[in-house]
Amino acid sequence: MPLEVLDAFKRAAPGQQREWIQRDFPALLKTLVALGDDGNGAWNLIGNACINNNLYAEAEALYDELIRQLQKQHKNLALPAYYRGIAHFLQGRFQDAYADFKLSRQSDLQTKNLHSPATQALAYMEDTLFPTRETIKQNQQKLVRDLNIPRALGRLIGPNVLRTIHKWNSASPLFSSGISQGGGYFLTLKNARGEIRGIAIDPGYDFFDIFRDLGLGIADIDAIIITHDHDDHTESVEGILSLLAKFNDHNEQHKSKVIDIFGSAGVLLKFHGLLSATDLFGNREINYKLLIPGAEITEVEGVSLLDKYGFTISAKPAHHTERWTNQESSVGLVIHTNIPFRNGEKVNIGITGDTRYEAGLGKAYRDCQFILLNIGSVEKEEGKFLKQHLGMLGCINLLKEARLGKPVLAILTEFGEEFSGRRETISRIIENWAQPMEGSKGRELRVIPADVHLEIKLDDQSIRETETNIFFPYNMIKVDESDPEILKYKFNG
Image (cartoon, rainbow, N blue to C red; front, side, top):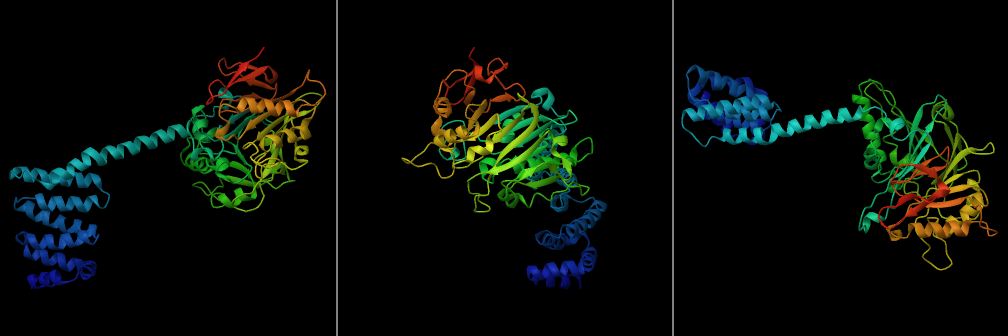
């Protein structure tokens, strides 16, 4: 009878064998036990069928029984131990598999079988699997250590500082011949409680890599502001939010961090699937505030932005098409701070975002002492402005409308790589032609091209000199572009 059962099993199609094993495994095992260890081929017939059909627990049970029988008779365990090792391995039980392969090899050595399949299996585990698992473990430990690095804003940057983390614009990677880094901006402000808050603005390509090179981490980012949905302004957002989730899973304080995101309609559509993210306990990790031209943003989730961050936001028009809305739903920004300027004014930071010039656009930035100008490129057609970016003429007209005859520091950003070696000169052209025509002495408009090293103190309007790290008033800084790849900011006393 046992042999008749096995003959029928052997003739069955593979799909039928799987159903048979799942339905009648106890009966099949009983049949094999009745045959005893002399039916080694029958054991392997069903054992291999179990492994071939992904029935690893059944294969393990079968070879457990066979090995028990062979041990009683002091017979060779090499083949059943090897097959049980495979069943253990395919269940992810690697230590059990390793023990089985060692047992199999020991049995083969006793019979002077020098070509044991267990030898290769052990080599796989010792040379590849176990070292890889150890690397994963070390990487996870490093990630947890990195996530738990304390906030370093106060030590590495300080309050009321604006850094540009930006070099070239989005088209550059298509034809880059050198360093091609996008990025964005990073702003630190003191809130009403004297706490330093970190705000990432338009974090595009390489933003977090540059940010990390400064010695900063996810713990230092409290909010993100995004003017539109293009990749050169959003590429690092997903990575930041991924690190936020890992931080909330692994931080030593067991306290969830929440990031506030302020963004356009296109940004909302692009990232809507991520914005409902919660931590392990179901608490929200992200608050989103929609930026629509004309909106005044003074709170988030019922909390005053001045109290929380030390700023409020005015969303301004920007004539630039977003991909996710297919409309000109991009925004410019004015960030209103509590930092004293002069004559009772408070420091306001204008960020044009990507936009073409339209008459009157600069009026939105009349109260700004700092303006970040996204130039994009220079005009390509005679007598025509650019259709999606300010260009050189748009920057000049905007500045004249915004602060003609008043103190202003304009930071020129969003260059194409065609500007390499020419950034300082183009900045001078814009600065000279945006000045009032009458007289030149005592002018307080400066246009300075941005690079990843540019750092501005907002409370005293100073810029850090590249080589000495000393801050000097912005009207005493000159730009050295002798190396077209790297701008240096030098004291010009």
